[in-house]
Figure 1 (cartoon, rainbow over the protein chains, first blue to last red):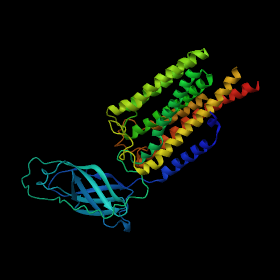
Figure 2 (figure 1 turned 45 degrees about the vertical axis):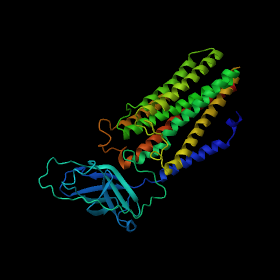
Figure 3 (figure 1 turned 135 degrees about the horizontal axis):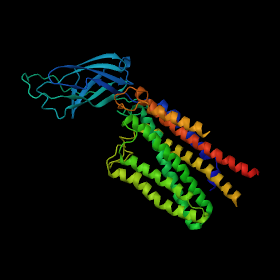
Figure 4 (figure 1 turned 180 degrees about the horizontal axis):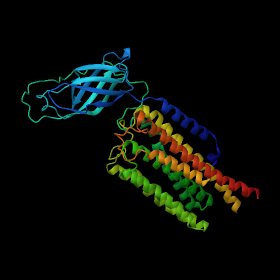
Length: 353
Length: 71
């Protein structure tokens, strides 16, 4: 266990976490449409939709030709008229003819915009067409399928994806998610020491395994607390009935029970052996509740309900640039705290002899 | 010392809950302003608070060790 005393990985931890902290807040969000008014419209009249966008550059001379489409299914309908109010405000005129309403595959229109600086950006299911039952003067054709001529699909050099609901809080990916990775890493680490204790019977392995669990629990509580705040501001409640949330709570409680179990046994050898055995069983339940069961059912968390979390829709390359260093950095921080605790506990044990 | 920590914790909890009752989408509160950037700040603050609190408990344990070493 000499590496516990070496310095290089602690420096690496500091550098990685500083990079993530400073870097992730310097990277802007990609452009997007944040608000549209009105939300719904009826056929046979031309509406003016007021769009509020984010991080767009409509007034900038470099923006070139600004284009907007209303997309229903796979069809792109050109916006009739654009009126740029400011860099992030634009009025878009659009209407659907009565004859057309039946040929539409869906009532929900995505808004897609494009200009030379911002590239292409969109709002999923931004406006809804309320179909009329019977139209008498059903002859007008207002919406025309426009040619999609994206001249310039340039994306900003480095920008986090713009997601509805998440917005800027997408940066939590580097703070909330690694908490669980740290917990998993430390718990796995602790399992190795439990096995080694049962093999060799040296009490220092028991000390390592105990302290790893203590640190893992602290990070688990961090993960729960940050998850709750994030959930409140995106999903609307501190605790939603989601298999991943409940599984995580169970996982944390299993290891809290480990500490209680240890505390209740006085005899040192007996305590170490029972704790080691408990630890081996509990990691199975931990992995099951956090990584397997949420995969099998539907969950609000990305990466559940069958699809892997590291797909290109959940993590794009700009997020990856910070996500992987963040994971390594936080895991190293966890090991650092663990090493301090373990070394202290070893001294304490020597004093007691 | 415990009293102060408890006071601080309850204070921060109250900060996070002041908008209860409204739905997150319609309310115009602080946490949702500026495209929810403060959610990220709050998350980072919570992590740092918990880790610092934990470091203080380690510090206390270390002090006990040192005192025992002296005696």
